[in-house]
Image (cartoon, rainbow, N blue to C red; front, side, top):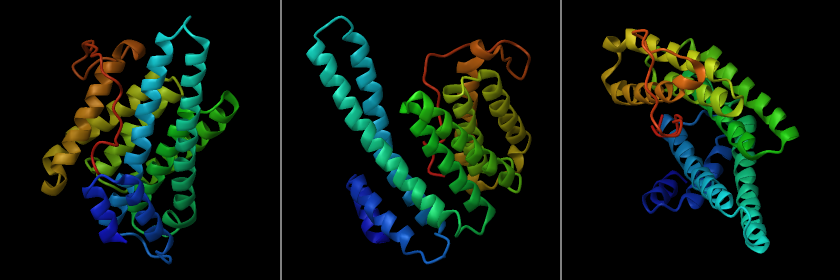
Length: 254
């Protein structure tokens, strides 16, 4: 299964990569996946959900430009968007089932537990992006609980650990985008950034690149969110705003 998943990744056939990694997770028989295996699992699902999230953003943009135009075209766009969202829901439900049934119960090491609880929070967050108002409240609460559980366990990791930093990054995006709480988002992101900065000289060489990349994403979001939160930069001066979307921790393969 692992060889098949790697081959599928090389040729960018991510649906097949998901199938292979899902089968591997289901056959793990109470064994914790290796770091390589869990990263491949994350990459597989990240790509299949990522392409559909991008499709939804494009469809939203197209729909906004169609205001006052043909009802038939508007209906077609809406129908297409519903189809993409149904696919997204299936993907989220599938990985959440794997996490709850196999991956989290089989986790033994702290970094693995944080990795999977963060992942659980992420996929509930993705569900919240397109859920109805009633559903959004429930999945948002599920996301928050998963992130909070990850935060508790992450205290056992170094402040510069990429998994801990990625958690802070994604949890802060959740506060900003889903809960509409920019001040809390900035506080979380700033604390993680400053704690990591104070320990940067001690970071292991093999983790330095990922750690500094995520720290830069935290910094980018703090810059972007400054106007909404009234946040100041570490020197106490107002941070300029850049016109770019919030970054989450899906970019590094943590």
